[in-house]
Every structure is written in structure tokens, then in C-alpha cells.
Amino acid sequence: MHLHLGELTPETFLRDYWQKKPLVIRQGFKNFEDLLTPEEMADLACDELVESRRIYKELGQWQAEFGPFDSYEHLGENDWTLVVQALNHWLPDTEKLIQCFDFIPRWRFDDVMVSYATPGGGVGPHIDLYDVFICQGSGRRRWRVGDRGPHKEFAAHPALLHTEAFEAIIDVELLPGDILYLPPGFPHEGVTLEASMSFSVGYRTASAKDMVSALADHLIDNELGCDQIADPGRPLAKQSGKITDADLVRIKAQLLDTLDDKLISEFSGRYLTQSKCELELVDEALGFQSTDIVEILSNQSLTRLGGLRCLYFEHSVKQGFFYLNGEKISMDSRLTASIPMLCDHQNLTSAMLEPWLRDADFIDMLTEWVNAGFWYFEED
Image 1: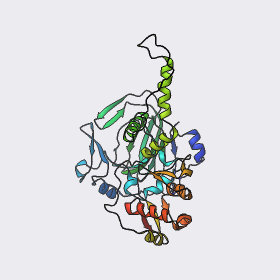
Image 2 (image 1 turned 60 degrees about the horizontal axis):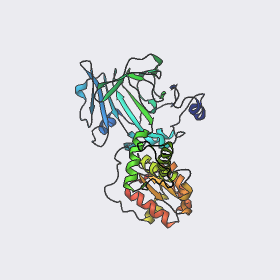
Image 3 (image 1 turned 180 degrees about the vertical axis):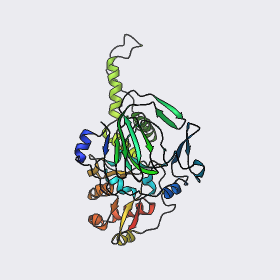
Image 4 (image 1 turned 90 degrees about the vertical axis):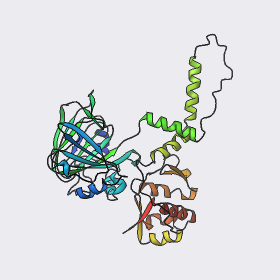
């Protein structure tokens, strides 16, 4: 699978469109094929671990239901939509689609959402707070996109936040292989013209509010930031109820001194590698021995589990630190070059890992991860 940006390059796209304005990319994927069938999608929506929704209208009123679902016949043949989140957790082939957008780093990646809709189906006019590449699969869907602005939003249903009518700056019919890129804040609405599927590759970051809340938990759990504010040499107070400008500087400095690069990177690494939903890990350790790993690698590649997040920081990678599934991993300095290999690639071959395959510590770690289900062997 290859992404074609037409006259654009990834560099010009990021410069001119990313987080700035929407873009229609005609035939971004040539001969695009759905990653799964509607029947396979319905099977996923039967699983209680999979986040799924159905959106439709009943007597003119919007309705939304959360899965798992076991039947659809009562919905008829028109005007309903089935949505499954985090397809990348459940379908390994989704990785091929994500890799096409790897000019955007994985720490910004959220998930791939798949949508199946019957004619007339849609989720209503709304505004998203994240960047998304809507990749049209089989069928056709009409999209209207408005400009950013003070659009009023309202709850069309407790689970559906819609926006008021908007004037379209884009009104387009997407065909298989076409892509619609939408930055945050642009109102949009898609209506299916014939039974169709679309695959939305989404990128988002947490709000400052959410991260500060999680950071407070990190400080508490690890008993960090416990030092009291010190103020030796304090001048005589003449107004006991006043916080002076100098005191405010002290308070701010105390907070900022606590939030040094080491703390922020360690917290962020753990936070950003936490899985969006429950990983499909093995129930018990698989029992591989280190010698097994080296032998099997000679014939089969290792694949990282879908949804597993693995990241490193530029400033600390040479110190042997990276983050895996919410945990900080430390490696000896002789192994630091393996970290980008582990984090930058979804598939690992014997040739890629060859510099470290005779290192017992590295193989022991790799064996532990395979036994936990973080990586698994895939036949070539």
C-alpha cells in the first residue's frame, strides 16, 4: 500500500495543510481494497472488548447505541452506520495503512476507525478535535466541510454532539482510494450514497487539563515534588494579607523547578505509551526460551502487537531509556542503538536485530516481551 499525494510531498503537506486547512487527495491510494469485509467488521462488533457504535435515525431523531451487537436486520437497508474504533488493535493489516502516514510521528497517532454505512447513513454534522485522514474504501460518500468559526454545538443525542448548519467550503463525493484530510475545528458531515466503508486514520494529543491531572497522579504515586517552598532572607511584611510579586516568583519557580526535563519526559513517556484500549495479550507466558527466539528469528519475523505503543525521546535515547506500554525500560549503553530499531519498526527481522542477537541481556529482554505477547512471530 502506497500513499500518493499528487503534486504535494509530505513536506509541503505539513507546511501548507497540517492543522491549517482541509484537503481532498484524489486517488491517494490507487486500487484501494477494504482492510476487512462488512461481515468481518460485524464480527468484531460482537466482541465486548471492541468499542463499537451504531448511529441511525428513528422517527426523525438521532439514535446512538454502543456494542457489542448481534443483529442488524431491524435497522433495514438504509440510513444507518456502524463504527468500530481502534481497528489497529484487532486487525494486523491495519498497520500497512498507518505506515503510509508515518511522516507524522507515532506519539501523535490515536487509532484507525472503520465505518460501514448503508445508503443515507452518516453520523450527522459535527466537529472533531483531532486531525484525521478519511480514506474512502468501497462505495461512495459525499462530504461537506465548513470553515473554522464560532459554530454552536448541541447534543442531538446523549452520545452525539452535533453542530449547527454550516456553509460548505468543500462539497465533494469521495470514491474508493480518495482521501479527505481534516484538521481540528472544521465542521463536516458525510452522507453515504451507496453502501460503503471508510477508514479514518486519526491523530490527537491529550488536553493540557488531562495531562496535568495525570501528572499530579504521577507525582503522588512516586512521591515526587515533595520539597517545601524555601524563602530565607524574607523581608518584613507590612500587609499580612498580600502575596507580593516576589512571592509569586518564588511559587512559580518552585513549580517550574519541579517540572524539569527528566520528570516531564519520564511522565510523558509513560503517559503516551499507555494503550488506548485493552491489549489482546496472552493469558499466560508462552514459555519461549532465549535460544528459541534466536532460532525462530532465522526463519520468521517478529511483529509488534497492534495497539502496543513503543516510544523514545531524542535527548535520552543514548542513555538507554525508552517507554513500552506505560513503563520505562532501561538498557545498557552497549544496546542503545537497538532502541530506534524496536520503536521505529512494526516488524523485526533477524537481519535488523543481528548486531544484538549474541547479547544475552538483549535476548533475555526480547524473550520476556515475546512471552508477554508484546511481539509475536509472523510467518514470512
